[in-house]
Image (cartoon, one colour):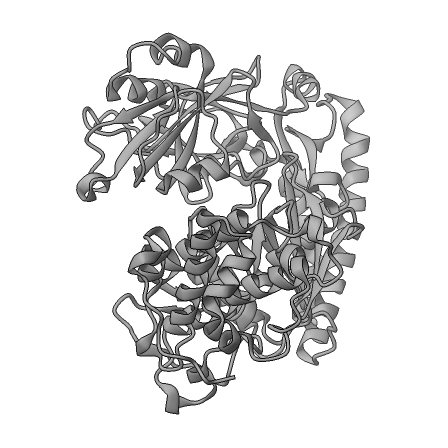
Length: 621
């Protein structure tokens, strides 16, 4: 221990003297693809304190400059340091794509506070593999979008860029991608709605023209620094907002303003060396104390499952979304001032990201075991991209604290609208909206069961976990109990029953009913839709007869009378109500093999009631 302590005492002085006299060559200007790269940008091959975090650039073969966001890449065409503007284009649209469908795969997600979309940007929206024809005036059909069109589906582009969640849901498109482009280029090439439809190549030309991003910088500080012969950069400072402090690299050390020469420089350098040596000595002692306490298990914030969670995040680095610090979470929620809800998992708070987007921050309670629920949610939802599955924007892990940052759903959960006994009939949802929520949820489950690279079984489908956006488009949430499976895997092995009482499939309780599979979600879905039907009836008509016995059994015996009374003798509504009930009764069959798949459920809801037969009567209560 004595030699180690002596080394730690000598090391700060040697390091500080070396830094004080070294010129930071890694922060001098670099060049890639004929573009100068300097503060606030930096090459990933150089020191990260040469520029802002999150805007490190990649240079490929010295001919292509790349700006990486999460797992996606954008080609940098130019950087204008005077106007603080960067021109980029989606790497999916490269020169080698000389023909065919302009195919984008992800929406733009800016995951750094330093960049923002420039005012010169406008949007066009691509809708791929749509089951229904789009007749909007701004819509242009794309050709050659294979393999999406092999089943007769069509792909479109909306020139005005505008589409609501309800419209995307109505057209039944497999994927919707909003692409920012230069507004001037868009108007010149694409033209206005009503004119002759452009060719596929026109849209590719617009995409290849790219779009502009603006960046923030303390340019006046950098001007003074470079004017005095220094190099601009920054250093990490945890007490500073954003964790960064501007730094001017000088031959004699670092400063926050400008470089000085001669005798004026010697005194602050000597004082800096002394102060730095003392500070580093104190830091070394703190580190020794830290490791000693860690060895003895005296650190209260150390979570026993943190190593396993960290290992999982490292192995799946390209899958999970942005990671935030706990300080970021407190900042975006204003120290958890707006509480949106409370559940068995913990609480949900309202907040805002740096770019102004509203989010819902789910703070998990102290997790038991090995952090399985947290990892399930991050791993499951990061593999999804569907209009009926909620988007996970980020997460936080700090000791025992776990946070999940979701897109904000202004209309809350389905339970809030259809299952609150205190609500009057004026606030309950109409049959049309309930049917839209039922079929949207079915499509989301169908995607989870067979539309992902990894099949996902949710295991906790219930009204509380169906969130509604501003257009009442449903989105499946809360993947804490989900199970990831291989595509060809049918049976699932789980330890103990999981789910919510009233929605759990029989086979999850006992193997005598059959194997656990995606059909377990089908059962939960059926019970939820039946609950939607029965809850609306109780909220609007005060029907107490159906509440006095097991509702699936009662509705089976009174199906025709109920459909007519619930729809107020409206033929179209009667068909919707009957369709929801009959499909649900099929879904809650006791034996899993007797239940339909979610693909079949969607087909039945889309089809006519004349082809729907009643299933065998369910006696299990």
